[in-house]
Image (cartoon, rainbow, N blue to C red; front, top):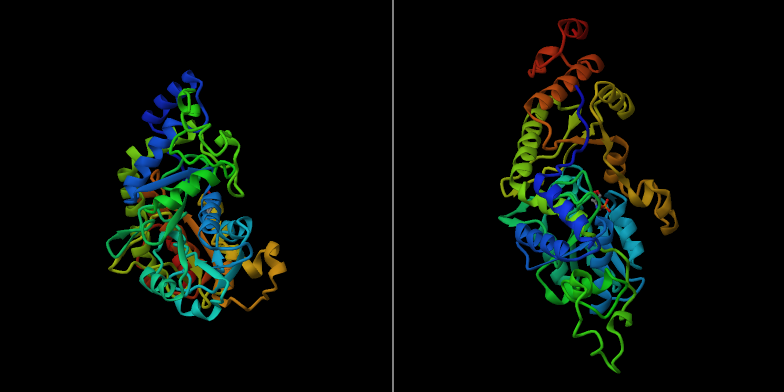
Length: 421
Ligand SMILES: Cc1ncc(COP(=O)(O)O)c(C=O)c1O
């Protein structure tokens, strides 16, 4: 059996739309991108969504908006040390200084109790990353932000469908950035999107994604219909608004075919989310059996986890290495991914910031001992049971744990059991 990490659902609707788009010869950002944005905003429950070419750009643009609202280049942004490296890259790409905070080992998310220690006069925003779809403790984050006059930009790249105290992730801060990369729950193949209910932020985001132009329309008539733009020469001295650059911009528009894949995913969203959530919660429930060697996250009563993947952290009691575990899984056809790194101390690109190994013990531990595996919509109970059985077999062979305490009994051979005893 093979359990690939990710999958993509290209629906019939998407294929039909792509054929129409190709026939129309209007491929760059236009009416389908706008339609996708509207639908995505509805799914999340915000008034505005601005599509871009990656989740990384979505974070960078959300941050760059802050220059219109009092931030200055070099100002500080607080983020967790543990995340996919894109979160840290985006802060630097937007011209800010990342200030890292360790994570909590259980939730894998930023430890709110460490945040206020690093706030300075130059701090402008906090980026809570809902890692592996597990919602960050947002009431505490928002309270810290309110007390210290900071913006909150959610990194919701992995958190489509996550819910915190009855509210969707993506609505909990000033802006939120989602990745639409192929392994994510709603995908446009490559892509990202910023959600907000602040129309002033959305206007600046639309300018930023197209080089910082003075144009801020939701959809450009020149792109969608080759029509006359009545606003175009109404700026100042009849200058062409398309060539007035109000801010340092990016070039990060989504194209129509990507939007068509995204629209199809939104039609299939409820089904995709349900299947993924069933897989994730099933695996999480069974994972208790693997204590004290392996741990995953848990679900609090006030939340729903966005079913992006199943994180696994090898615990101190395990006498085996991550490499050995990963090799066993991969040889059994189960694809794995590392559970990222402590950006400031395990990613050499961040070395210039001066952090040293040991500064972020929890993030570093997860960076050395964590993996994640897919829970996507093409998997079901059979694949989940195969995975659980493989882990059980691995533990039987690699720990002192008595076979009978591993009650899953999914596919551990008698021989392996007797060897263990
Ligand atoms: C937590 C996190 N932030 C940001 C990103 C960046 O998204 P993208 O790959 O679409 O640029 C990812 C990517 O998966 C991610 O996992």
